[in-house]
Image (cartoon, rainbow, N blue to C red; front, side):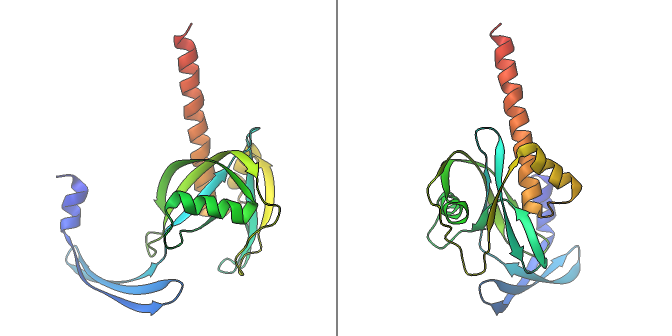
Length: 196
């Protein structure tokens, strides 16, 4: 038995009650953790997708949009929730078309929780290459005011480091892609060295 499984045996869920229901829901969980009774509010949110759209010259498309919770316009990767009846790839394709009007080749990279301390939202991250413009008009939800921005990938990384990009999914996705490219290039160099 792994250590995490043993740790989980010491946690006992006593109750889980929905206290609010809307586009998101909130539930109150009560559980025992290391002998202590704990109450925790949990936001129930649909799973979502995050998209890293890369152009052939390694430029990246990002978007800006107003985020009321932050009270400002943020620079982000395209993203959105998975609708009922969709799988993660269908949702990613729909979101990319709606938000920036492009399609392309989708590669699933990873998944992560956005705020597991209080939120159930699990985000699936896709890399998109071979981008092709499909629509010149955006198909946005009422609460979206998205503007498309193009940056060199290095500029986008610098914006993460300097604090110009403050959206955590975007920072994590950009550094994930940076590592992905470095590993890919390392494999290519190794193959080239082996062929000599």
